[in-house]
Amino acid sequence: MKNDTLVSFEGVVKRFGEFVAVQRMDFEIAKGEFLAIMGSSGCGKTTTLRMLAGLEAPTEGVIRLSGKPINHLPTWSRDTPMVWQSLALFPFLNVRENVEFALKMRGVGKSERRRRAEQWLDRMQIPEFAERNIAQLSGGQRQRVALARSLVVEPEILLLDEPLSALDAALKVRMQSVLKNLQRETGITFVYVTHSQSEAFSMADRVVIMSRGKIEQIGTPQEIYRAPRTRFVADFLGSSNIFTGKVTGADTSGVALDTPAGLLHLASAGGPARPQIGREATLTVLDTKTNLALEAPSGRVNAVRVRMIGEEFVGATATIYLETAKGQEIRVQKGHDELASLPLEIGQELVAWWAHEDGHLVTEG
Image 1 (cartoon, rainbow, N blue to C red):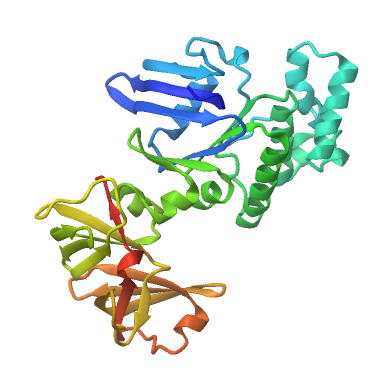
Image 2 (cartoon, one colour):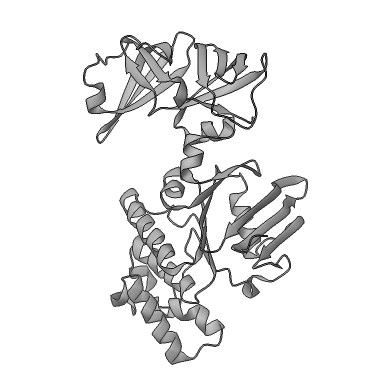
């Protein structure tokens, strides 16, 4: 275990009867890291968090906190407070009393409890609500109270289970900024479970992507976005065009792939394993790296003839939906200025193209 490791999962498995909720899991969380665990419903992310919190016991393997096994430690002995999706605030206590609660359970004196609670309410920019009932607060204010209640004990690690899911879109963005700044300022390790890519990628130092109880990929948001390791990750992120076909050439200069969209080429990136000729492989290219034209430029580019089937505008960006002759959908995401010279109408015949260097070969699955 590395010196900066706070948490380690070593061969951890979780079963509920015959159902395997979490397959063998081996990974570490560093001190002061903001780690997000994401995936669709039922992928095992919340079960993983609950095992770390002590709400579930691993069926196999060991979870260590600061190098010490914690499998059989009760929740209250772990110092791993959790911010729930429902927030779980006490309606019979006012705001300050909610924040003081954990300190009271630890035997902290009344005056010290009050001082620390007011300090955190001030830090969360809600000191004026100290005497209010929880029912009188907005969703964002309740979120800040829940954070203050967990952080007032100054834990080494804070667990967050989809804490922003009940907030509206604008408030979510503001709370993401609050959470990230808070984590940086305090240096507390955050482990954050979410199904939202925008939340995970905007806040986390590293992201764990799970599917069917298995870790598909761990990496920085940039690493995962640019180089998905498995077909599942590429599909899940939804930011790449994906082509699967038979490898017809593979050497130091690159890879050739015979796909339903045509013969595609990929520049060699010195990956971990060169695909074998005759085997199936998958190539991905980001929709932001995919270009549109009436005719493909010359040079080392892949070109696929497509027909426009739709468009979507979000602010200064447009997503153009296209379809190949074989019915595969391709997306192109560009700024309006980059698309202004093209005749973008439903049914228009165009060419989607990208440089060989902009493709990525999926190495697994």
